Length: 164
Image 1 (tube, rainbow, N blue to C red):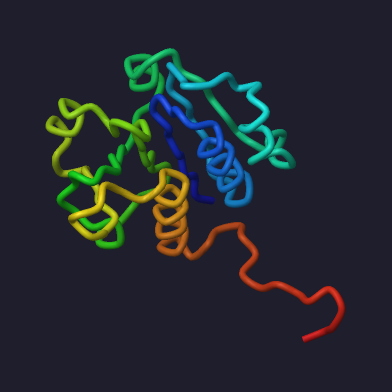
Image 2 (cartoon, rainbow, N blue to C red; image 1 turned 120 degrees about the vertical axis):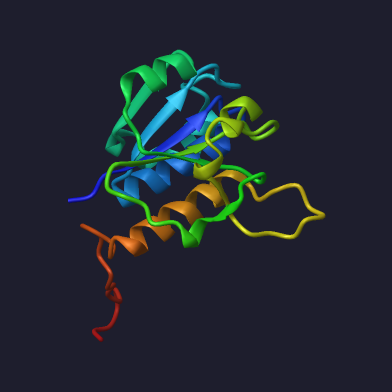
């Protein structure tokens, strides 16, 4: 059994957090949310994006970065447009924490500077700012799950009207 931890540091857009919560629910990943948020957890936009899945989440809230790091042991992987390592070139161990920053600022540069070897980038064109946060989380999560051979996930579907 593998455990994947998805960490959102100071998320600002409720729809992104809702979409990410849905990704966590369908993959079995644990969701970690570091305050302050740019919305209330009761926000209807957040609930709409993750509506049918909110009660399926394993979710933990933290007051700040210090609280998060005091309560968890890593290993940590910091997803950033400033990263030097391509996400698909990294081997992720069990209980990995993949950490994503605010939509408008990303992760603090001091944190990145102090963890250079674990700063991860999803390749994209240089002249554009970044991918949407919820898309980045899904790309990262599914690369890790692929490396782990999709533990506890169904890899085959069925038609509703016909049989294969």
